[in-house]
Image 1 (cartoon, helix red, strand yellow):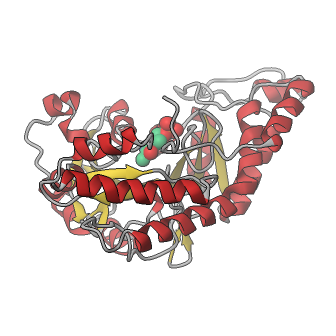
Image 2 (cartoon, protein in one colour):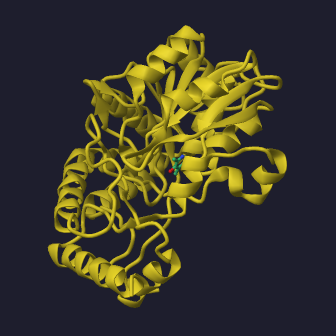
Length: 379
Ligand SMILES: *Cc1c(COP(=O)(O)O)cnc(C)c1O
């Protein structure tokens, strides 16, 4: 479909094209010098000791769990109002998921009190997801984690360059996992990054992302090594130089892009504040990356009709998220899970378009169409 306003769009220009050309002409495509530069720049940008580039955020989560030796017999607590990758990564390890409910209409993130209810003797870790780039209640969650000796892994797929109380998201826990999927704030098509301040976690992740091999093809190409050992069961979770080059170009635009996202978010809040809509995170603490603009429709409002009315204006909307525990696979695996707040709010949630290259005219179109759609469905 040819949207007048798509849900998301790339913040790409000539720099990305040049970055790809440079890699092509360098004649080295797989993980090498450009990836190392991207990792150093990403780590320096966020002020973290280690950044390890990987194929995507899903495998970053998998590697974080593996680096903590989480596996069969263990449990990991996570929210259900997130992309299914968050908890699929847990199941890959053989561990089980314990779903915790979210805070409420003002905050769609995992609720600290609900985390506490899910802790059992088997619990090893909590995966928090900073929904839309808005920080979870990390101080409280960190206190619970330390009291119960649980690791925190941050699914920071939405939250590059977000922070809370001066601490960058992704560095509150043992590891932070970022996504560079085509619709994320920093886009490389596919791609991801795992950050950590712990040397032991970084070493383990570096090994596991490339088959458990002690040297890389790149090391051998440079003459630094001629053979290798395999010391662990690893995976091919590497990124390539083309994506890393795109990542470097995108990193340079990230902060300005997030600021533009914030300005658009504030305009939406202000210009739609007299409607029946509710705005999660309007009074959120910390600095958000403003990845998504979520709204909650009034109770009983016909969401499909609302979204159809916007589609008729060629404005794309989405739902973040169909809760994971209600998907067929998860329903069959965990039939007893009940998350009343997640279920009630997910049913009222719609995401409006938000991306840095949105024009002022496009913002006005969305605001006007949203008001019209609300009127139309409340008749
Ligand atoms: C996009 C996303 C992921 C998965 O990222 P990939 O890079 O596509 O693997 C995980 N969690 C959340 C919350 C996401 O939005």
